[in-house]
Length: 369
Length: 93
Image 1: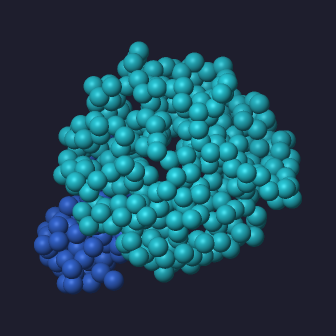
Image 2 (image 1 turned 180 degrees about the vertical axis):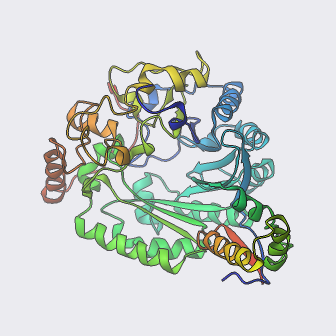
């Protein structure tokens, strides 16, 4: 371990990416560009073992996600095992495909909460982002979730085309009786980086939406939690990505790789271990890739001598790599980063350039990452 | 607003779990967790929806004697209000 004791590195949350398959084609999908080449390689017994080993490591929450986790027919077995292990299980879903009966079954097996994505507040713009008719069905699923007494989180990814409708997103969440609303600005990696010029908002759009969200948070206090995640492209200092590399989060990808986040396998030069080959605890503690960006020894200036190095941990390694080509660079989102001009240029290009068409999530020829 | 005659219980989205690693109780809810100190854990375990705050205070007064009951009541109300603000507590009037 490069710094701190073992106690500093305890995974509280397991992000179980059960599959990259998904009926939607969202233009900001967080799955890797080469998702179509990565098959589901962990079978039911493998995931059950992952849950047990994760719990032994200290994990108390599991996000069952993907892709669309509902396309797997062994979700029931995983939820039941999560319940047996007293894990808090969140189903993170597009709501498609699911029936009311299946949701009821998952609830009875111990599912603790459901996070449903809603791309916008009406069918036209929502289906445009998802690349498929889905909005009306999602509303139906939201009502089922509430009818069944399951806690409902709505998640709406924000970008240039829907930021002005944040007041209506909040109103929709209230109408549906959501317990929590995540207003999550797009993170520009993967498909979203590809579509950055079409998605990046203006500073004014963001400021307005943030103010609306803050007002709603006060008004709805105790009834609905309202979360507003600021995008990296308009911050002075970077977000503490994943609460720090390999500190609190553990992710297992559909092909079995154990990762600190959903993008880390796109970084070059890191050998990622698979749950098919080694116990989870061993990978978390000992794998060179997990230890590569723990602690401070890897940090360049200005991070190394920065007062905020234990607050933001140098920002996002994946953003650093995908924008600068160097995973060990200071996150360009930081205003102190030598490469910060990349962010300023991206903002200018997106806001001043000619309109561009979306590239929808799909199998791409010859893509590596 | 939590009053002494309210009957608090955890919101449906919240689960209480003992964490063997820290030897503390934890509240778990979507995407978050809260480690409870022993006093907070004592309070939360009595939030079943059956006992009023006054009854919870009475039980704790026995355990935490000789602390004055008024002090305990003040602390219980403040802690429960902070949970309610986060949407983690419901109370039947």
